Image (cartoon, rainbow, N blue to C red; front, side):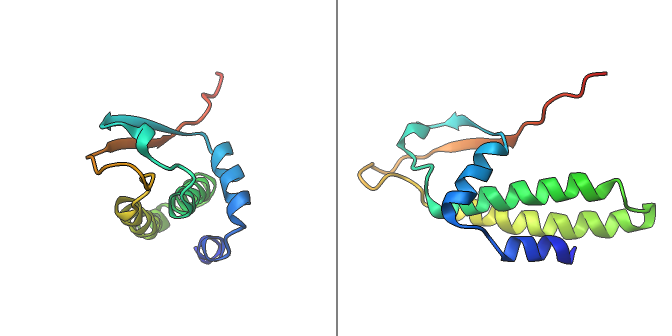
Length: 117
């Protein structure tokens, strides 16, 4: 877990984070409002998405290695880190400066390629 915390504490440059977020295959789906009014290059948004992607990658890699009695604690710690980032995501104002306020709701998911059987 200290490996994940260290990774999140030592972020790359903003440009590098943008490249990594693009490779993470996040999909943004509008639920309500016009998402074209948003600035998706907002630094806080990129940092939060980068952090969520890194947590997800870490979870997928490390979960298989855990013993059964370790999984509950692992879920709790990863959930806390993820929850903190999701709270930050909800507080970000990443509207373009010239736009008028409007309620916008969206879903952000990370898609994974399906494994061929």
